[in-house]
Image (cartoon, rainbow, N blue to C red):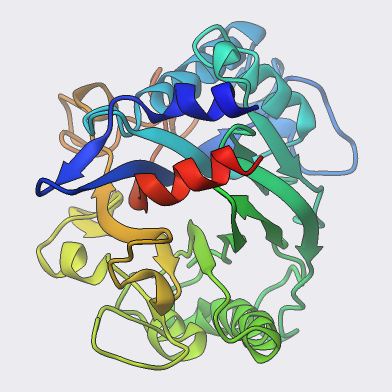
Length: 351
């Protein structure tokens, strides 16, 4: 077990001459309709069958799996010695696609595991959490059902929030993976549905903090709203103000959004729906525990459309019913935390 940890550690990031830190990244990616090719009569997956509108063949499915695997393999590689510990995923149909994904040749040696529960979403797309068992140990996992107000949408079910409690490099942490209701029908009209999920999530977070005021919390997901949207700022309680001393989450994506960066585009306007947020006790640089370093949007050239009306947009899998051979209509995002090397070595020696 000790050698397994030591293998993870080299090389490392050094700040100054005395302190050395281990970088660990946490990512989120909306995989855009990662379905298998098998008809599931319990959900609306008809478009993603070989005889469906999108002619979703085994060849397309395998290419899609390969594309998502390529992205997950490449995220964070521009940071020396970095390793990705957690990846939240959205628009995942089932365990089958997750199993095929983690066993793809690009990912198999990394020994990814996953947590997933089927939700009552009409389209059958769920959230999931991939984790590197060398870096993260699952203690418990629960799907959190959220009831959508009956006057907001024709369908009263949305994706569950996935809550996973575990140990990240030995430190207890709560992870919430989200995919909030869409803006179908307009941003204003659909807002109450997202507000309901945001308020439910805030209640779960408050309950944790009432029991453990120093709990470390990660919230990630496709929120279908921007970092400055009411659902994120008011209903969830997230802010980019580092000086606040309260239970609000720290959201590093506000500055990205204000500078015009985004993770998806619509009608020549960028939105930044995909976000990873942290509790404020992870903001202060520490000599003993994990702390926040930086946030990034992963925009490798192969993810970007190079021609046509959508030049510069994320290179998506389909445009309407026409296969484009792309990756997703969203860019992935990730944050990087740092762990002091001396603390980690102490943990290893005490195993």
